[in-house]
Amino acid sequence: MNKQGILFWALIILAAFGLIGLLGRLSLANILIPLIVFGVVFLLYKYPPARWSRKAKTPKIKPSAKTMAKINAQHNAATRKSSSSKKRKEYPFQVIQGQKGKNNEEDIPKYH
Image 1 (cartoon, one colour):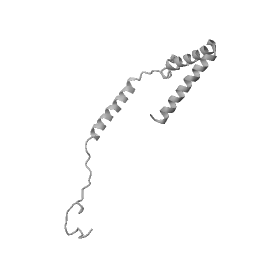
Image 2: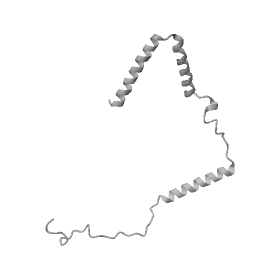
Image 3: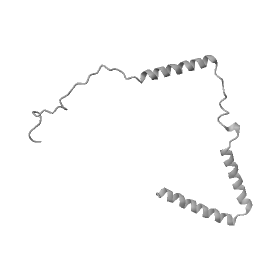
Image 4: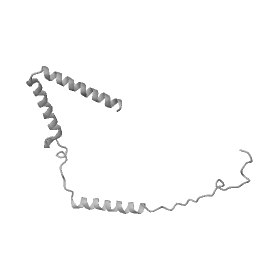
């Protein structure tokens, strides 16, 4: 186990001992109020009201037929362009054969 894991579990155990000690000294009302507040905050976080959700901020607008025709034309042009770009292009370059790969005994020095 790494050092961070050991530190994490040590803190969790110490927090548990602290809570057990705190429960022994406090009355039921002093324990119940923070638990209720924590529960309400957790429920609001997990299930936010509809007016807080992001979906409600963006109204749904149906595009017109003219707009949809433009979008479809752009999409079709993009698909045609991508299919033609997949072909290999012809470049005006040539490979020049060098002397490095050839095995000439005259070029090899006697001693290295």
